[in-house]
Image (cartoon, rainbow, N blue to C red; front, side):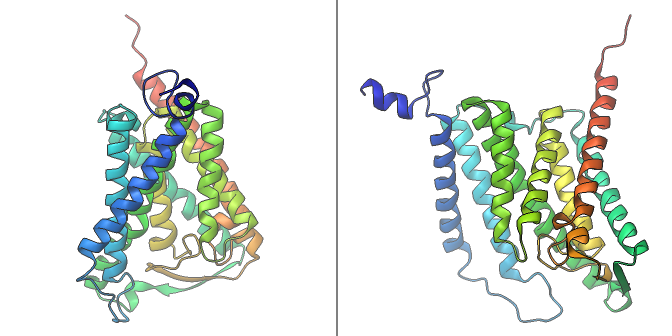
Length: 304
């Protein structure tokens, strides 16, 4: 291969594809795996017409198939294009893994509880009841578990593994860390423009969410903390407190209606489209900073 085509495709630092081509290849792999797996597994799956079921069978299988396609494409791209181990993306098993997951999950729950309490006290939220007043225990457990999978684990794993994992760390190698965090956060926000009721404010706040999650990765160099935050945010926002999750309604424990100004509450998109979301995310960044100081104290060697 002559010199100029080689410079376009091959990195000067190591004999492998440049970062942009690796990311593009991973996206092609993901699409191919998704189409293939959908063709194999979706032929015998059909949507249900039962009104009591919120998350139908086809939706659950679609999320699981997309999750598998994302994971497989990034695993192969990391192993054979990046020539790095898969866990180097931030999936190393370490003593802080469970603590980071738990802290992120609980933090997101507390922030969402704060949003709910603030809007209720301000008169911008009308409480109408609890779901267990009308549904059986079996329905609550089943729909909660399915919602935790569909709204919590699946999107969080896909987006963290993609944006804060494969894309951010490849762009960091190709350009630098600042560009990697900025670009992935912007793409993360733009991807949510296709959500129902998305607007300019929701895009800006979702971009801020991306920066928050990137910061959580940066201070730990692992994906466990942003995964815990992401799963917890979606779960408590949608399943527990009954807010829309990115403009999408879901099964929820608390029946309520947001009646306050949309530019503050987020309206039918959810708190990510309002100033309450900005305040909550800012507090979240401060708590993550405090968590990083706490981790540093515990991991710092004791003086002899």
